[in-house]
Amino acid sequence: MPRQSSKPFFEAKGLHIYNDDFLSTRKIDNGSIDLTVTSPPYSVDIKYGEYNDSIPYSEYLSFTKSWLGRCFRLSKNDGRLCLNIPLDKNKGGQQSVCADITTIAKKVGWKYHSTIIWNEQNISRRTAWGSWLSASAPYVIAPVEVIVVLYKEKWVKESKGKSDISREEFLDWTNGVWSFNGESRNRIGHPAPFPIELPRRCIKLFSYVGDTVLDPFLGSGTTLIACHETNRLGIGIDIDGKYCALAKSRLEHHGVFQEKLFENPLATA
Image (cartoon, rainbow, N blue to C red; front, side, top):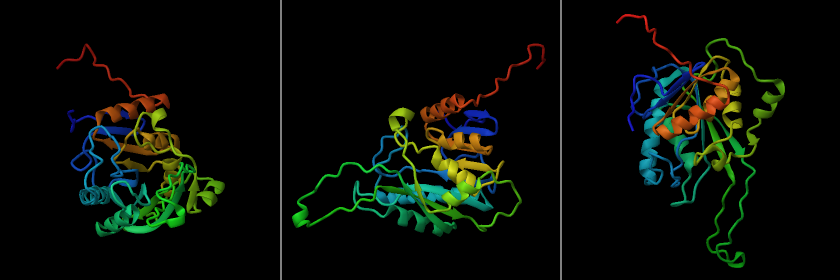
């Protein structure tokens, strides 16, 4: 599928979708992003379109270092990053995903601020591997994900801006445990969607109205929908044209339509 087009896949009301490879795209200027909100591939063999999510863990961490470094360069000095990732994983071997990715983020230059625990309230049925009366190798699985909050150079915002977060939201969301349900992959049509509540909270808590928000793994477009609802500028990148089309369709469902430009038939070349 062709990428690196000179035009965005979709553009309307300050929102842009690019069908492109985030690691090589030239669509975003360095030092231009106020906040990045994203949920990258998890390396747990989820069936995406053009991305192989079953690569060896060492390759996954190498890929993680590359895209985190790119996010760092694209961010303003007071830019922030909200990174939704698993706490750990056991599929394909036990790995401390949150600890490993946080360590990599700091190595490429990001500074650590905090970690929010997202309780999806979705405890699936457990399978007993052997008898609990003789538990030779018990597995401990936490039914949560995390949102690691990082920043580039300065945590305090350099410029004055307008916040749109209410007092009640501020008091609730600065508690580092967030409880809300996940999103249905069948309803959205994407193998790993996150609910709009996740980017909405991150955007309202960690950016100003009118700031520029980036999602380098746009997927079904939820981050851009949250940008539209909170009056932020939004940039979404996805390597898979099918998911760009899905994100476009969802934005249109929320009332965001691309203006059609018609050529003047009387204009001369």
